[in-house]
Image 1: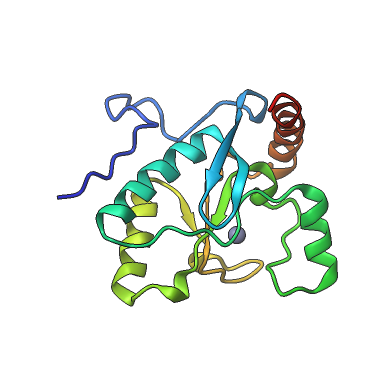
Image 2 (image 1 turned 135 degrees about the vertical axis):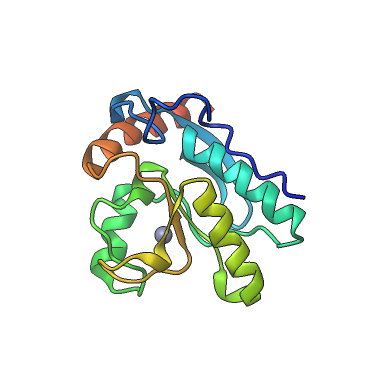
Length: 166
Ligand SMILES: [Zn+2]
């Protein structure tokens, strides 16, 4: 029995063909404690989907530790230019709180397959399917629009506000 539920969409609403048709400006940032990462920030819809994914992983007895989640644009720029080996995406969904990396090589093949399949059920994208800039098996994200720049520009000031009031 799986408790994997996608609570972010109404299955009866057949008029909605995408996860979220709201413009980037209507998306919200939330504070979140992520094992392996610490206190950080995520897009609220992506956070909900990770809740479901984590519940599934817990049920399967798969340990939940993240390698990376939100990366402020400045950090992303540094990673891109310093050659640290991390996929150097410009305007990464990590900078909009819409991506998280799991230590996939630490899981069994069965666990990996279960995670990928659960993520896809939640309509998350898996980096193992990426053609450009390259395959990235640890990476999962939600891409509500391919206008990453607008997503980042909306997310960044919200994080600054959340930081101020914590
Ligand atoms: Zn990633």
